Image (tube, rainbow, N blue to C red; front, top):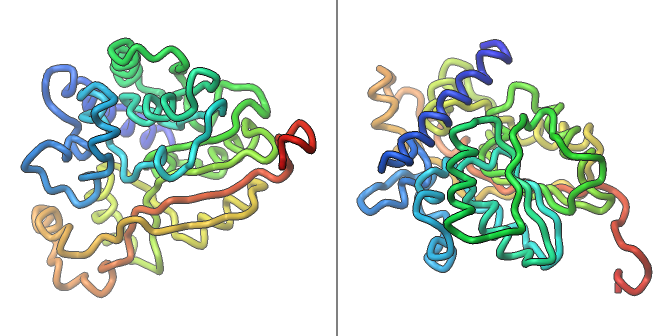
Length: 282
């Protein structure tokens, strides 16, 4: 698929997911799996009740994430945060509560339907330290050195130009700022035709990086202190029903797939320090 085709596919998928939520449904493969009776191994049970009780149900239902970056990023009061691909706003709203009234959280999304849903969820939550922006993660509409933390929830894998995404993330982070994202990662080689079908199961539309390639791209963008920590490893059994529907013999491809796809928490830091003096670095 071309870059434009991938972008259109992602935009269409997320726009449809937002519309389903606004009419009482849930997203196709997102945290709607938190709904009772759903057992999606990718998106279920990402947020605990102390978090979901703080936000509108529509924000949870609209999420298509594969992790919980707000919990893993260790946000502090007063920080400025950017969520790349913010969807219905779940991670933006949770982050806003963590950084408090002295902090600020931006949510960036290219899908009009998701932005409309996110702004409605913000209104219902009565949270003021949030701003939703329309744009693409390859062209972040913020000035250089604007934010302390960048989070993202299973979105960078959707981009056809990940190098540009990471360069843009580096640009808008303050010196000493950190990247803390959940994403889909591959460990080891997987045949292309098999990978395509498994990625369709994982993310409906996906382009997951191999772990070593992810690290190389982060380093090329200028990041340091790079870590990739698996949070959920997907077993073949998880995908068996989906693959059968695609006409694929799950047992035949087991050695090429089992345990190689995972959700991971990816951390990295922009060199330098955002500290204003010796006292604040103590």
